[in-house]
Image (cartoon, rainbow, N blue to C red):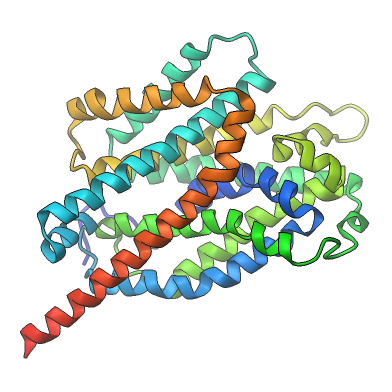
Length: 364
C-alpha cells in the first residue's frame, strides 16, 4: 500500500525517539527514583520484557486492520456509534496527555530560566506554534523531527560522556536493598511510556511499509536506552537520595557539565533539547487527535476547537499548585496512561479477532 506523501518506517522510529523518548527521558525519571531508588533501572528492564508480548498484539491489530485508517476500520467493523465513542474518548485522552506535557514544560521554564516572564505569553506562543504544526501535515512533522532530533542526540551523547568524570558507579550498589516489591511496582512508570507505541497504529495508513514485530522491538530497545541513560546518570552523579529529591534530574545533570577550567554552565543546551522534544511530542499527539476527530486539513475547525481546548487545558494544569500537579502526574497520569492504552489494545485486539472471523465466514 504505497500512498502519495506517505512516511517510512524510519520516520516512525525517529518519531518514537522524540515523542515517547521525551516522556521516558524526563517525565518518568522522578517517579522511578522516588519509588524504586537505585534499583529503578531494573524496573525499566522488567517493563521492557513485559512489553515484548504486547508487541505481538499490536502487530495482530495492524495485520487485521489491513493498514486502513484505524477510525474508518472501526466504523466498518463495529458500527458508527461505537466507533465514534472510541475515537472521541481516545482523542480527548491524547489532548490531556499533550496538555500535561505542555504544563510540565512551562513549569520547568518558569522554575529554571524565565521566572519573571508572563505565563500567558509563553503559553500563547507555544500553543500557536504547536497548532500551526498540526495544521500542516504528517510529512512536515517528520521532516522537522528529523532535523531537530539530530542535534538532540548529539547533545545527549555530549552530556553523557562529559559527565563520566563525575560519575560514581558504586552508588548503584547494593542491589535490591529494599527487595523486589518496589522494583516491580515501579515498572508501571516506564511501561506507561513503552505502551504509547500503539499510537503509531493511528498513523499506519500513512506509512509506506507494513509494520513488523522487529520494528517495534527496535523502538522498544531504543526507548530502554533513553530511559536507563539519564536514570543511571542521575544516580551515579548525585546519589539515589539526592536524585530522588530533584524534580528534573535529567536537567540537573547538565549543571555538572564542564570542559576543563573555562567551559562551564552549558545547561542552556538543555533548553533546545526539552523545547524541541515537547514541541514534536505535543504536535504529534494533537495531530493524531485531530485525525481521529476527522479534522485533518480543516484549519478553521482546528483553530476554533482544538486550539482553545488545548490552551485552557494547559493553562488549568499550569495554575495548579506544584505538589498537586506532581501528585496527579506521578500517581494518576502515568498509571492511567498505562491502563488506558492497555485497555485500548485489548479492545482493538477483540475487534480485530471478530473482524478476522467475519472475513473467514464471508470467504466461505
